[in-house]
Amino acid sequence: MTMNYDLITILGPTASGKTPLAARLCHRIGGEVISADSRMVYRGMTIGTGKDLEDYVVEGENVPYHIIDIAEAGYRFNVYEFQCAFQNAYMDITARERIPVMCGGTGLYIESVLKSFQLGAVSFPERHSLNIGVRIDRDARRAKITKRLKDRLEQGMIDEVRELLTKLPPERLIRYGLEYKYVTLYCTGQLSYDEMFTQLEIAIHQFAKRQMTWFRGMEERRGIPIHWIDADLPMEEKVETIIRLWKS
Image (cartoon, rainbow, N blue to C red; front, side, top):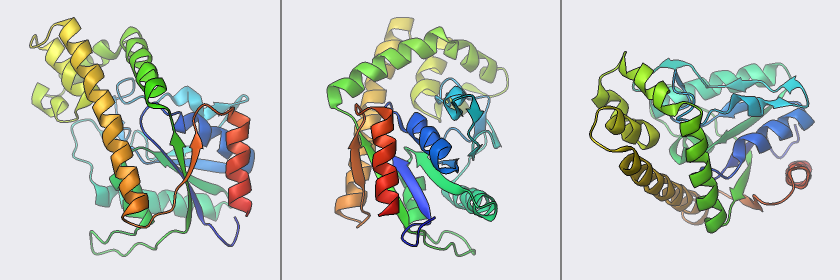
């Protein structure tokens, strides 16, 4: 790592292509991904959370990832636990002289690391991070969200929720929001398929807008610098841009 940064953070709204970018970057620089997603921590919640684990295979090589599938579905994972998990992953990665790349869309989790929130008895060091935001045009984001929702339903998201409902009460799944809320309402007969799709699609669009509002607040009101790059740039150009900033 350079003297300027001890962490690279890639953030952005849902459907902006953060994960493939982080994985490709790690493949180039000898890094490992630390997920900053509040729902990817849960086992058995794979399609609905968009883990897309195939994204971590780059040119036939597995890019290591952390803080994914570490808690049982139904458990209330919180920000302090994320901070602890991040610290453990960070120390493990850097001890092996690899580069930690935090990637995700849960603004509170990301900010808890970048601003070193004090939530428990343990004090976490503040990280000097190069923060990369992936910016995607609103119309392109909406189209990608719609296509991705259709794909996930075809891939078995409803069956995934039905399997979870054999272990958890509906109200527990609904608490996770978005896909798990609306597909649960469909599976329990409270929404038709078309109602589920339409309401879920709208909810995801609204969620993406809230994410961008959070990230703008980080940058404009809470003093966290973010270098924004366009999602529609070629992958290698995005990777080269990040490497150039990281080395500067």
